[in-house]
Length: 165
View 1 (cartoon, helix red, strand yellow):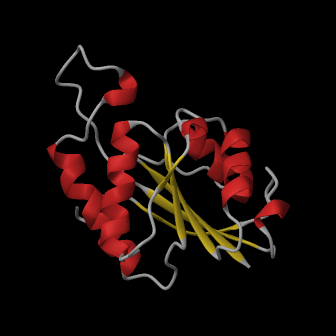
View 2 (tube, one colour):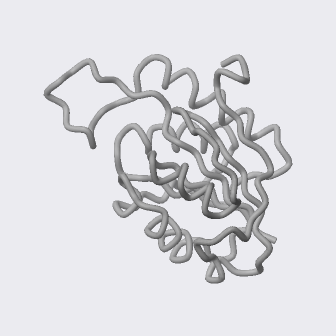
């Protein structure tokens, strides 16, 4: 059994119109929500063995906050350019490539790809606003077996507003 945690990056800033989409930083709400979601993950039974993140600044800053909160000492967040605004098939390819022996993989990325991924893997359409997390249990022994079809079970969705964040 494997677990895929799917996390949309925390809220980003649109304050500076000269900053490219890829380089947009987290805003104050994003800086607050990312560690809180990380602490919520740390309190769950499933902890990520590896964190895969888009190279967009708002995504990798979110991933770093999660890594700090769940206490992944010595394990860096793995940045992968393919996750920037990725479609579900590309996300699956990244997880297959990097998952290795990990029991639980956390992917930090963007919509609409993440919402479609969760729907395709579980058959459940779930909105993922910024800093929302979905947990999907997958009946497989190897990440190489991951396919883009309803094979998983949605274990939960956590959204900052519902958590009082």
